[in-house]
Image (cartoon, rainbow over all chains, first blue to last red; front, side, top):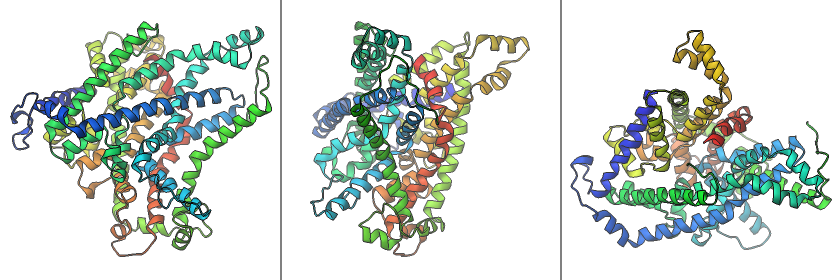
Length: 284
Length: 295
């Protein structure tokens, strides 16, 4: 037990305490504790920084797009798989669909470059057919749909796992009873399937809301250079570039702390709403 | 091949519905498989064929292992492969050891300090410390440019911990009591009773850790000098960012199509995952869900 506890104390709580740097001006020579205090100066600078608000806006945009376009996909896929009666087909599709989750973002991005890039599969096909080529990877306007597509490709299959588990726990007899009462497939879906998996859907939405300001740090960082910060800077990459690259540690930590506080607040709020609606939520 | 079993109350879907379903499922399978096929094929194709084809090959006419030979001649990729393998193995073992002991302690009722420690751990899930403080911590601890910096800051994963704890809790209490009556101490119970019963959960959690260590590149770019980089970071630099790989690997100005070599590195980075995946795949649902449903 001790090594585990020690790990959490040092690398989580130790680092949490390190957030005091957000109220300081970090001087490498003086270290974390020796650096001078600047009060809320870093935060004031942050709120006046246009690049910061651009990053916030990008983050929210991508988060909303993900919520609308990504979130329903695993649910739909799970419902589709659930209706399959042929179990070997089902298991095969599941295995294939889970796989991309275990591939690193570096490889996923390289794969997308390979297929959609300048000289990729799609463009070779287009130019071969005598059509215009499209530069999807390097186009700032295409960036947001692109990253959502990547998330769908990588994690939609894996996302079905939790829905499938919820679906598997639905009592077969309820379906049977409904069918005997004359309910067709759609009625059964509406009155048996959906109510049964509602708690899981609510749970996942809450978790997503709490995490809404994190939209794939590695994914964005890997592709930021191709389209420029205007399109691809999110809060996490902003923190990275201001702090680690730019050396402005106090300022970057302030942005990170801001993000953490908003995230924690959102989880708390979403959980309260879930309780109001009579759902279990993430915690009680 | 297990056959189709349709419950008696379920009506047979209309042909149109069936066709739509089949189409959707085929699309899912193809969307995942085709990109991989392109990568493997391109890595096996000859330089000439890749150039003729405009950068990629769906099916090589004359497969050759030239690209792989170039890579394994010794050079950064060979070295990076060693680093990745070492970090993955050492990291996974350390992480598993720490996670198992902590999860076991937290799963038993009446452990001294159990409740506060559990809250302490769950709180970090809600409020992660942040990138800059973590970076400064690693720096102040003097871990910069050490392989430990890839492992220690991510030693225990809260999700994995919760999964294991849930699994341990699902073991019937009678087994614990029986072991106690036989005079087994905590360690004995853990090693002889709990662990053998938890193979599925251990396999899944171990896989999660191994995949995370194998796939990690960001910490390496943050904490390590370039000559200590693991495979993913090399991949990032030379494939995603497009720096010249051939010169750096072989040390001579070869004119091998970088494309085939790049794709070969991609394949090498993916293969270990493809190798362990089928063995562990059957445990996913079982291992993940016991924990996830509970939490």
